[in-house]
Amino acid sequence: MGVPGELLIGGEGVALGYLNRPDLTAEKVVQFSVCRFQYSVSDPLNTENCTLKTVYRTGDLCRFLPDGCVEFLGRVDHQVKIRGFRIELGEIEAALAGHTAVREVVVTAREDEAGHKQLAAYFTAVTPEPPTAGELRTFLKDKLPDYMIPAHFVPLDSLPLTASGKVNRRALPAPQLTRAAIAAEYVPPRNEIEEELVEMWQALLAVEQIGIYDNFFDLGGHSLLATQLIARIRAAFQVDLPLRRLFTAPNIANLADLITETLIAEEDDAALAQLLAELEELPEDETQDLLAEL
Image (tube, rainbow, N blue to C red; front, side):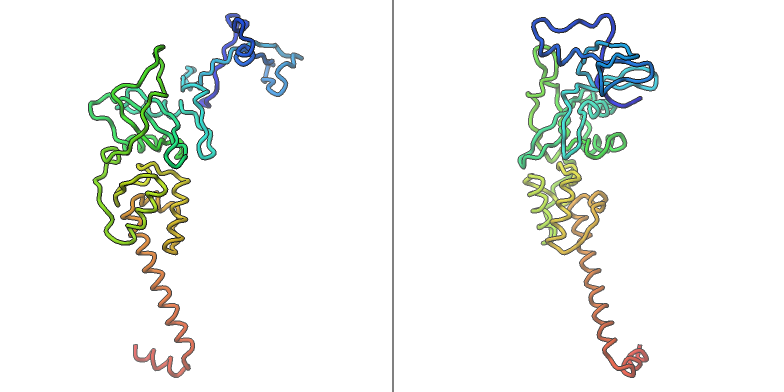
């Protein structure tokens, strides 16, 4: 219940196959044996105590709902693999379609300038003013794991269609980050730490203009890039920041404050350690005299 899978159609109405297309018939019209209490998957043609069934593989990704209805999620051939995770694009589309301001939506996987695959969601809005990327990302956080949340949200007046009326995915425009999409006013770096962080973000995200209040994830960041960023911060500043801090402080201004606070704390700890070491080397009577003066 609720688990996505390919819809198979069986029964008397299933055709024997495609005319003069034995290759397509072998792919789409399959047989397997159905026993009383189980499906024989490992040995589909084992008919002992089972009934041999012929079914048609629709290629539609669906799932059963608690009320017994079958929900269409998309196409199986729209399954992609990103950062080691196998993702059903139809699941993301179904989740986004639940937003009250979204009319139509289609999700694709695209490569950025660095060659990394990223999810891009294209949608038309119900309202004249479309929801922002931040609003849609927040909406999806309670419904999908992090790796299934698109890096880009692209509002369109209408989705491009083929002659047959299906969405023409090849005609979808490449995502373009704009200041309006980021939903933050550009503020340049104010000190050396912020300048160095901006350079790190530009290299990782392949984005030219980055302000200190821009959200790392609104710019296309994800968990893998976050890990790389934390490693670069460690190498540049000799500061160990937990990965979770980037999720709670996802802009350069906050990160720079964290780095500064950590560096100051480490300097104080080092000074205290040096003072204690010097006190241990003093004779006991001098130590007592110093303590008496406090």
